[in-house]
Image 1 (cartoon, rainbow, N blue to C red):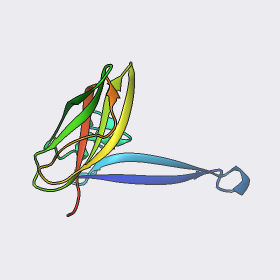
Image 2: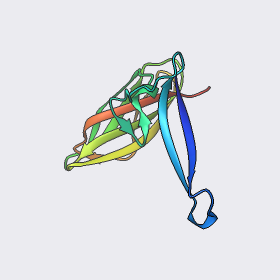
Image 3: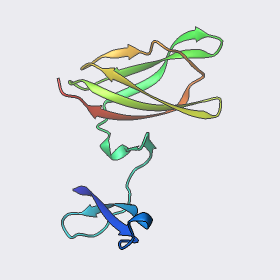
Amino acid sequence: MKKIVLVLALIGFGVCANAQTVVVQQNTDTKNGQTKTDDCAYRIAGICTSEDIGGVEVSKGNFAGSGYYHLKFSNYNSFPVRVIFEYQSNGNFHTGTIILKANEIKQTEDNYYSPHNFKLIVRKMSN
């Protein structure tokens, strides 16, 4: 099990005017106290894929004209989820979120120009 440990250190302790706060974040192995490496395949908005529970699929949805498509999400889980998604369009990466009910298939209201290279992080929501 990983824990996030925040270590705060003050530099210039004796002089308040020169004091700075340094924050060090690390993952630790609670069994033996050793530091672990980051095992994220990727991050979206700072959230690691290790928080992903899966069970959701994304694809191009209905064609909206001139290369624009809605995004279609399918939740195969038996509980509601919040999906944080990333896609590429015109060489740029864009992010967004969508809430899906249990076993829901839903398209976005917005449409996107030629979306591809989808990445998702799915998080369980309480009922």
